[in-house]
Image (cartoon, rainbow over all chains, first blue to last red; front, side, top):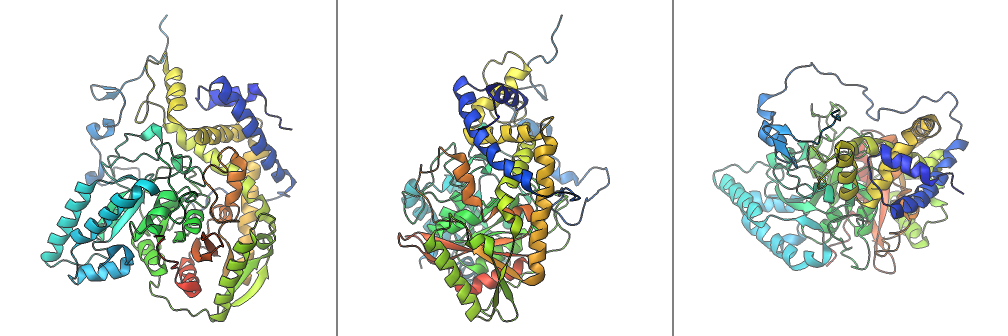
Length: 101
Length: 482
């Protein structure tokens, strides 16, 4: 039986910035529990001395100079904002992020 | 001339030779899409006027004496998680229903530079998360061979579009099998290149260390041609490799000097359908008849592949999908109380269940107290899986396996059991973890008339070997679905 509790799901949902309904919390508790039970099988693998596999590209990190790229590929402010749900005077618009006192 | 029956190579030749106008090519295919895509649901958007105007401009270019494009006048479908400038790119999600990217993906620029016509954007499981395309928030895609069945996923729209003869070529993306598994279910050639062979710039990110864009086609040469066009270095993707893949583009059914490995672990799986196993073995016999040496190999760690994948892919997804916040683009909730409410309700309303499940699983395995037990352990198991393959490729050139344990399943059959759905990818996931190339080529149909796919795997940057072997199987063609 899964170790995942309702509180666990609520905590992960908060970390994930998802406002779940009560029914969703219950559904995901069961489903995530099944999946986590399944992935527990990895605990039987011997990983002593094994380096984590981080970069699938065999050539390692690629660096470039910290400068502007091809000017013709720049996008304009209008383009950058063309999909913004709310904008104002060249800025993305959001609710107040710091409470006033 | 029936355009829908032609391969991309044949079509390009006829266009370049002036035997057919590009306008005629697209008119015929648009008519076929209009007639049949209502039932198949492969495309989420087709802009008829834009397609015709593109065709006319290529015709004008040919009339002016320039007919050099390697995909001149060839229609290509593009999975709707790949950006095309100013064309809605939805990822089949409510979150991005109206999103118009201000730039095109690297692969799209390559297609256009070679004279291709992008005919439309294809359906997928939301954000490429799924194995049946049932997770699309926009529409159902049906398998062209039998409309009661799923096309596979997540690139189900692209696979179905090629199988239905709507286009000779399509682009998909493959994070855990999302090209190869739908190719298997729809009876087309589908290929995931070596990680880094194709730029991911402009592909909406899911699992960045696993994602690769790759081709769908009805023939092996067509798939190789499309890969040749889209592969190569791109300085917008630091994981794209400097060296271009060496591809022959023309193949013969000669496997002499090559060895094929059959992993015992892949053929002794409880869930492997007998008919699938028999057809895959028969295809391997074709390779043997063409001169290949066949032997057994072992991949003892692959039984951990699905578990490893669902830790790493979800961890990467939880980070990649953090950008959908209701601020910069995408869905925004009404009347947010504060910034956290804005994020949390926009995401709750914009994402479907599978996407939420994976974001939460990813945040769980990355969270304090679980990071070492899950994520870090999975990265180490991933290395052991990659080492299994490296060792096998010391012994053989190519590994042959089923692409999926069964043929396509019925719509709705696995929709309420996420874990059962995940297990339909057991044969494809390892290649993404190891970074190696994998190709699915049709090798027959089961007694219900549903296609079966043979999967071929090779070492890093040996992608061309896969096309060579696939050609030797049957040149890929089980025909058009209807």
